[in-house]
Amino acid sequence: MLRQLFIGSLVVACTVAIQAEMYNLLHRHFDTLMQHARRHLHRFANTGVIIVCMLYIMLVHTIVVWLWAGVLLGVGAMSGLEPAVYFSLTTYATIGFGDITIGPDWRLLSALIGANGLILFGWSIAFMVDLVRRTA
Image (cartoon, rainbow, N blue to C red):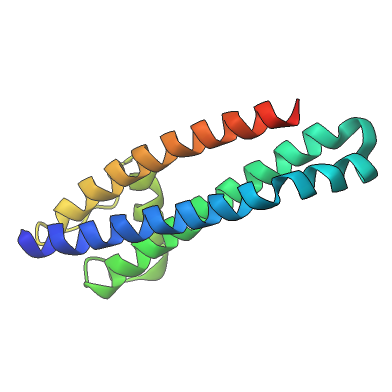
């Protein structure tokens, strides 16, 4: 149990660092992106920037899901890449279909994946609301 919590906590810290750094990068370059969009997209500049930002946010979450999948493979909780990515994605998005589960040796990781996704999605929503506000 302690091993699961330790590994899971390390991964959560990594996912927070990844999201913080990637959001900081977008935040630093947002004004340049907006100027470029206004120059080239004219009337559709705001929509274009919102689409780019949303895709960027999805990229951040995709990286995090792949990290969790790699951890599941690395600790032996999953035997293949596709099931590991699928399980990570459905658990991270708190969908949890239940068609794929992990054994009791690593099941605490699934709770940490879900909690991590819930928190990072909330952060993403707040970040996106701020970006949409800035396009106005």
